[in-house]
Image 1 (cartoon, rainbow, N blue to C red):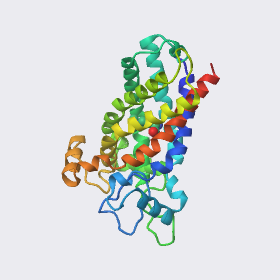
Image 2 (cartoon, rainbow, N blue to C red; image 1 turned 120 degrees about the vertical axis):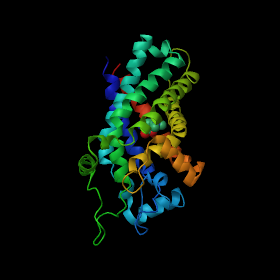
Image 3 (tube, rainbow, N blue to C red; image 1 turned 90 degrees about the vertical axis):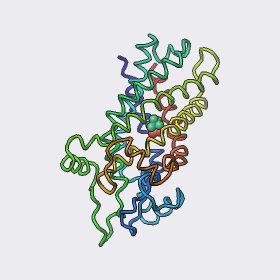
Image 4 (tube, rainbow, N blue to C red; image 1 turned 60 degrees about the horizontal axis):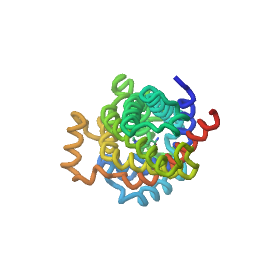
Length: 304
Ligand SMILES: C[N+](C)(C)CCCC[C@H](N)C(=O)O
């Protein structure tokens, strides 16, 4: 099993994450139960809290109360984790295609796989990476929903002191399975949308590149960017549910499952709730995935 795709996936995932993290940090919404005085500057907030008037309001309040650092809250942890997850995603995707078509990454330019094979390989990668992603994503969402400004005299201490303390607290309070809270929603979110992710990328590259040649850097950037947007647009409704399942039991009522969360969210806040964070998801998805795919292709070309 060629390992270079795993390594290239690791590095490209880390690069993409750093570029996209500030966008990532403006997507959540406060639950009414959270203290009105606290400022809530993180990505998941537009999806789990209801105080912000929108992206700009959330960004202004984030900067005003937590400075620029507020946009990078909890990033140290996802850098390592998302890189590993991206490594699994791209490594499994490429090796599944190798198993389905008996062609390596380089050979596929001359012998492009069918879109059915690309979709199957993408779904396989999406399904398997979700298992690795689940605990990391839960910790990221919990940290991003910390509501206290950075340690200021008199401010209440945050519930979690950092990713390791967060993981230990969840393990202690909710048991080992607590670390996989929201994993089912995450798997439902990522499996089909990763298929869409890779089909969009490969289709745009194939349409814009002369037969048998490697796509140009500009083509890879644009194809990667639109692959990110397409997959996030289709993933946003379940992304909202996933975030709510992950926050359940803390400051949100626990749900009896994904369907219960979908029904109760729609009943209480209308169907629009499933598109919270769509704009910021899309704005973030283009640069993040453009860089991810460009660095991935560059590294594989370098190691050819
Ligand atoms: C499948 N889903 C849409 C959830 C993600 C697809 C893109 C993943 C990429 N690492 C990013 O952070 O944008």
